[in-house]
Image 1 (cartoon, helix red, strand yellow):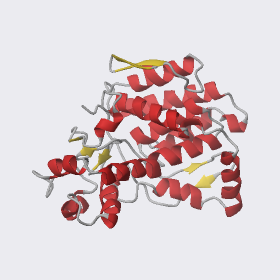
Image 2 (image 1 turned 180 degrees about the vertical axis):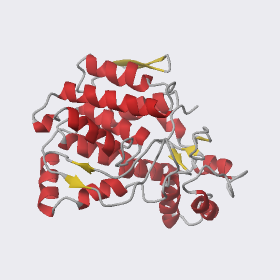
Image 3 (image 1 turned 60 degrees about the vertical axis):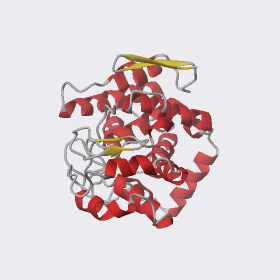
Length: 303
């Protein structure tokens, strides 16, 4: 059962590396507080890139090209998916989640797939639209009008009773599993890892950013990924600014935990308390295996 809901966003300025960048696009993506606005889930990431000059983007690309792969290395990326799945679905078998679909009563409609795409937060709609461009006869295409109608709400109108079964059936198609992988990377994994590297973070820090992007959404508000990062940067310098990596990540996790509790004081935060924080306090900034952690009181281990 998926334990985590989809979380929030609004407008702000952020400063990756040493350059201040202002977001000019609308709030978007997952939210723990209200339905999504229905704009693209990649608006924040695109706004960041659009706010950079061509020379700055080129310099960023050259910097990243010279860095170790970090979380983008195949084995580390697989490990990242296992850790996320332990918190999202209480399993290490993340590949078994392509067909997952459930309304977890978080106000975001159906949550589905390997990263928790939601019918209420635009990312599931975008996934099906992009998939349908290449495979117009797929089993989910007929639900596109309904998906557009319910986008930004928790409604199931036009989706029940057949959509969950259609999703599970389509998840047996290799092309749809690939489409989920690609959308996960495009919206969540690649932007998070890229910015973590520009902030001077190692593999653990890159994972912490990625998990935050998944849980809180790519938003610029105080509870969105970029907003949480800005709050952390007000309290500590990133490594690229000359700060301590451990100190910065410790503060970042504090801020994430506070954001998770803001909506519901009883919300479980073990994905931070007995997982990511444990890795940090163990000094495992490279996210080396073997790893042992707990989420919701259940112990997970990767050799």
